[in-house]
Length: 419
Image 1 (cartoon, one colour):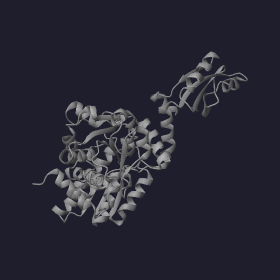
Image 2: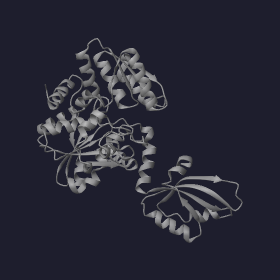
Image 3: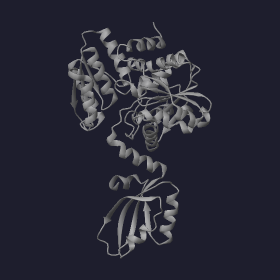
Image 4: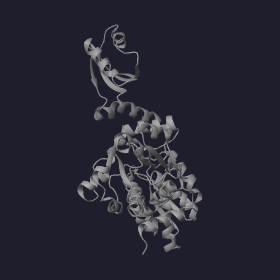
């Protein structure tokens, strides 16, 4: 019986029929910023701009080796797993049926169709992923198809482990030596479980750090309980890693992780990392793909002088989301706030307020919320500024001149209705 490390190396070797290794690149910008030797394992440069292709290929390959007559595969996904499966369906010449929520953006549907070509059929069903998954599994059972899981499958985990196999081989070939630390994202756990399993066997001296989105910390919850649990609420912004329940197979390989090595990344902070990598480095990362880079500031003391690899797991970023990303980043850094201003209904009141603004302050939104009051009107204001500390001075001026306001920037309930 072969070991997990041997199987991972075999999976990596077989993958070469599909695409060459993704680059392992030193990043001068991050290295200089943190006083470390920082490299990026660029899974965002895979053919489908995500590592998901690896697990889908390995799982489908093994099914076909066991049962060549199995020519129908099913998946439920609105993201990278769908694109990876479509790509390998075309490669193997088998039929794939991919169920997607009705709410899936057209861009993702189009890309999945492009990768799969005539081999893939897309079915839009359900408003939520859970509904889509139930429909897909029911149809799969009726048709006698094989359901290709996105992460909770030993063959998928083994395929994702090929990232670690490549990483070590490239590190040796490029003369950088073995990394001191590898930072990787965690969603359902396929990538992190595969890489961890391989490092434990082939390079136990490498330290690992695991990053989850703050609003989808399913591994943290599982470690606390000693078993996978379902989160009551998930922030879906980091859609490539926002999973309500980590997989059972993946948790079996991750349950030995030290909770101190698990880091939660705030969604709004991730937005700033996406913008920095895009504007400074020209690297397009989706929210999940930015997780490993996002936590570097918190690791600054630990990584100084060390060799670090960050796995940038995906680059399927829809640029229509760019305004939202900028908005969330500015709110996180304190450079944008929303306030409801109680404005006196008298001539010159608006001018008086505008004179309170500083030279670096700018009104990004101005909207009357209530127009029936005789003496005062409620105004929703979105204010942007160059430096977060400018708001303290602005609010002091408003209060000194008798203006009444309420800062609603962090109020989620009000924000759902008016922002």
